[in-house]
Image 1 (cartoon, rainbow, N blue to C red):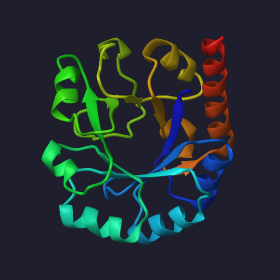
Image 2 (image 1 turned 30 degrees about the horizontal axis):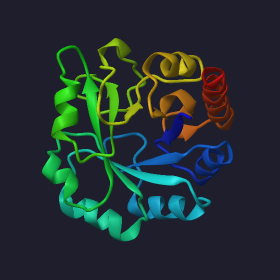
Image 3 (image 1 turned 90 degrees about the horizontal axis):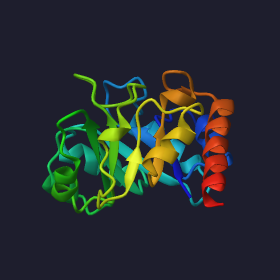
Length: 210
């Protein structure tokens, strides 16, 4: 079954809507230049509101290691997600499971990325948009993803209820990561869109399992 992560949560009601509709994980963005940025205090409140068995992911972009440790000391993150130019050594130093985001474009060797970041729990594949580390709402050419990647693929970039089924059929990812595709505005989620997205994922999973 394809897992679903709802990223860029900023409000308790959105976190609860994600959990209620069956999201496997939520993403909290600790990157000040993002419109979906949350403070440590906000993140602590959001994490505290969630029911059990929802994975809490913290997203960082070229953050100082001390800041990541400060967040970890205050927010019960289950998984770290690195969206910048972090090295494998940097990502591994926190003794937490992590994902490495790769901005995909022609010429990016994803097999090499998987080898370099073999300690990651998965590769999060997002669109390459110059100067923007993620959350662009832009899809990329899924044909660029090799079928023999040795790490789980978390597919991101321009996903919504309209293309979720096609993404799963073509890529067969471990998970889909959606942010702008379930929003009313940047950082404000739409509960109906969350429900529609997750229902579409469940529907195509059921079809493919028959």
